[in-house]
Length: 387
Image (cartoon, rainbow, N blue to C red; front, top):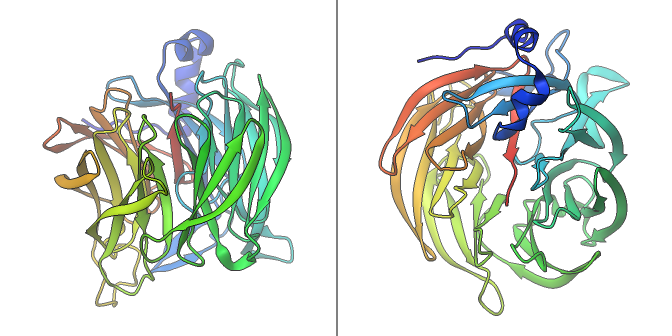
């Protein structure tokens, strides 16, 4: 079954369904979509007359999942596909924009620092504030208490800290790694909110931050996993993290690693090879499975010896700190983020070239195609509430 929703189709749905009652029972997922980026024979380019960046709100609990609203907001494909964070109570969402059109040359992009705050309880949902993080604002996370957010700034060598009170988000400090080329890409909290891990794809490190209330500090402890650690996620109990090491894009098989966060000090304890460029990584809500989107050369020029005419989504079982392969499925081209439904039985995969979110059913052993959700701009980051 295929579910294709154009912008007109989404608008028609709102004419027949009251938004407030429709979203109240929904399991929300948000996709940040970049209109400034297209792939032309392996080259990331700015299209002529690009569509506006946007955020698509998805009811992930529906069968099949479906888009229920779209909001205009700055977004970017640059950085890990974790540029969205949803508050645990689904009251607000945060969306970063690592790039914007260059005012001096609209055929190019330049680093941006925008953080949009979206009120998900409003009818319809709307952007209620636009804040500034650091240059190249990329991965963003909210702690489980819903009181603190971290934004990794890839072009600035920093992490921005924001306090959250209800729907009010306020700048609360900056963690500076002392190296603008360190490329902080994503920051993720442990379950107790006392520790955060930050991937640094510029200098191949994963930094450990300590958190005491609103005070966030760099512990000077770094973990080494692989070449260019990028996306990262932590199990619900906070004891284990998984990180995607995207490598150098030179056609070699790349890896994902397991970090024992409970160890003193935290350290890498397992690494598996997954293929070319693991762009996105996400744990299932129960922490038992890891989904990885693998470029598989689908973003290469067609004459490249490393080109393949499809990407992959791979799922691994996580037993303690050990990864074992569970399932694979072919996906589209230049695919970005992955997201499990709350029950772990549905998996979404964002594909930039196709401008669609591909839907799969997952029974623990096999992935089965179950439809698509169309987006007007390229889907580049995805997240749901993490409780």
